[in-house]
Length: 118
Length: 112
Image (cartoon, each protein chain N blue to C red):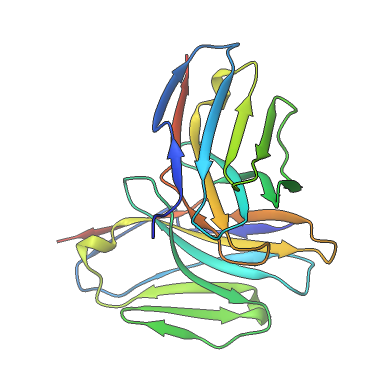
């Protein structure tokens, strides 16, 4: 069975500070995908990034960056120079697919509520 | 292009009733998945359908069922509603079965 742990329930920082959201995952599969989604108060989950288990290259997109380390089963997300609009709940998720075409869907962590204060 | 759409937006039912939630995927997407999100928790996987066939099922009772239509839209049905079924129900679509899932705005179900 897969598991995703987001140990930080809530983080509050002042605007322009950098903040890192932690994600640790567990799976026995060798092929899997990791995701980050953002959920603003409206409720709709917004896709941010997807990585596959064979690509440990870190990625940067504007103020967002992601650090994937298989050795520690972690996929952390950093926001640089945070802004009030970054306030939301952020979810880390894991998916594993099977050669027969079956799927277990996405396994989500419990989310980290990020509050950016002006 | 339009994103994933869901209807209705909100729904209030009483215990024991039945409910049907609807989802239209992004144009060109053939897979639809359903998730239940209880307040304060991450979404929980219910079903995945691809080309009208069930490809995956989460740990939910048989009161939950779903189907996918030839136009790739989908319905989630819940029978004999319980108070604990109150949640945000999210639908997601993707092109195939190994792609990124894009979510709709959800249907908020309240069971009284």
